[in-house]
Image 1 (tube, rainbow, N blue to C red):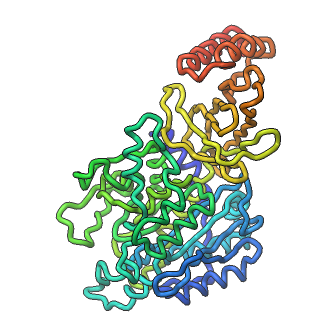
Image 2: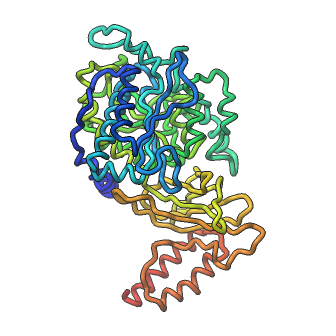
Image 3: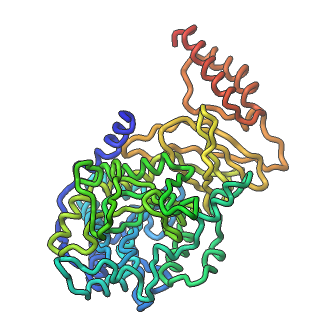
Length: 503
């Protein structure tokens, strides 16, 4: 626990020196006001921002608008630069997310203009996409409703203009994955093609537009922002047992997702505070308790057809769901308070796109796309049964916690390759680069090329290092498939040699 706390502290130092936001008016931004914020931001920061719309409009004809921030070539994916996104206002009557994202947009522009070191670092090393509203039609309906006892109606405007709940409208990939889990070698990622996803009956235009967006940009990390409670929610959202409306349903990356959720909740002013009162906006008889301000989605309540799990199972993107407050539609004068509560957490979460490893998959100088990157924990030997794929440019990104791992790359037409790595995430540091140069399957591989050679080795002196190379690497790793006992033996012999040499 102390180590995790230290990691949170280190990765969030940048967010503790946040500056004051200027030239931004808090309040209820209707669709035109939202567009004005984006356009004014783009005018102030033309070199590092770009505005674009998804290729389908809402039911009522409004565009789904996104603003992108990056310091080099906005509009272009650059190999080695991870893609991050925030999506707000998926439920139209949950407006806090919309307002804090508009504030974040203004904040990023201001920070870059003033050369704030943390914002500049994010811009230099990340491509950031922010969609303030996925459901602008629902917002307009909710905004038109009168308040009663200070509250807007609980459900009016939640769905889109055709009464479709967008967070129940995505293809149900969870059930499909649960079937694959029971099969030896069943799919554990990218389990649905774009054409298959778009063939789902009764897709809302907003859902269809977002699905195409997810397949067109290789997002690495994301969160969709909601309201009505105060908690960071992580996969899976749907229970493995159809008969249970509440059942902890862990993903293969459960530990990583809990860390990501805490990276938000611990930097929100009150989300992880155990003394705060739980939300009771819907009159529930039993209020959930969220330790550390996080929850497994299905443990809270089972959701089928959610956007969060679709990101994780159909693409390379790891997504969480953030509930930003008990009141779904607070008064305009309260919006600034929500920004102050979420500011540090919003920034800290973006930095998490740089944990783990990244690299290029190549063969003879040519990029290899669609390669499968598999990861195993060491020395336990437990595989993380969720693979990622390299993109069209041969680049890949794999979020990982601190620790020792074996990384294996498999691509059609090539011999598989392996590396043993030690991940040590640090603040404002890009993910560790681990590149792979694959050998075509019709060519003989160099002896020992497929060895799982640890990248973090003890300095034992040239003689003993050569001994290790000759006596251990070739025998244990040269032509062997990775074996946990071999790795433990290798580390044991390293310690013996270190004690003998004194180095």
